Length: 357
Image (cartoon, rainbow, N blue to C red; front, side):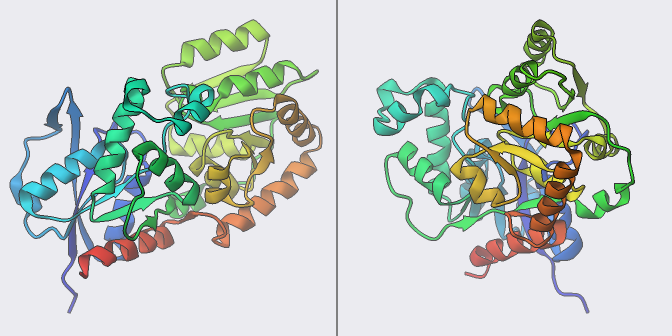
């Protein structure tokens, strides 16, 4: 006799269906391994109005033990439904988005004096999201450094128990694509083309190399045309793939000597699974999530970045050794990225803290 499934509602943004994001992986893991009935509601807020992908069916809320908002903009929606249907909420607050609102330039001034009058519009929006998160009965974050940043943003201490959200890796699917692929003289980034990913840093660095490798960038975003123009101006060979299948992505990763993820976490785990090391800027938040998995480069130090890329490309046996080390870190659960079954179990344990009360 099977036990009754635990029903939860997950608020998700409107999705293209091209990629599986981490929330989709979590939903699959909770269903497949941990006896959850997961109901997904696609919803967004535009100009203060709540929009749902389909006509909202109130029956979706009946019997739900928890409403989960896995991203900051969705917490307001979860809290709205939670209050309306008397269901407790779990919110996740990731981070103040660097670069998106020029955090690199104003970070110190902002954190020392976060007065509402001086805050850019985006900061005010993120601060409101943080407040919505702080009043959820169950809250997840990324670690002590992120919590400190969030409290500085809010202007007050967040009270009560907090939990660290894991990242899921689709290892079940990825195992199907492990192949013996000949390496090309190329490096790769898996990234949205937005300012804080600092793709231009990589392009500039490659322009200072005598014989730069081809740079393959998997992803799309608003800076695509700028990045193309910048690479052309500096004479750097790049290839932007746009949207591609996971199978194509895994092939490109495996044929690359090294990956560069100056501000990213999950892609570092994906590359490590295929024994390809990633170079990352040395930031407290990155060390909290990834521990010793990446090759760390001094933050915003382009000469350091150039030297590391040069070493990996010109002595691929070094990159191979570092890739094996990254794989061991990942598979031995020494980071906050876990195979899907383990990641969804850890998330289930967090949800149980609220459901069992």
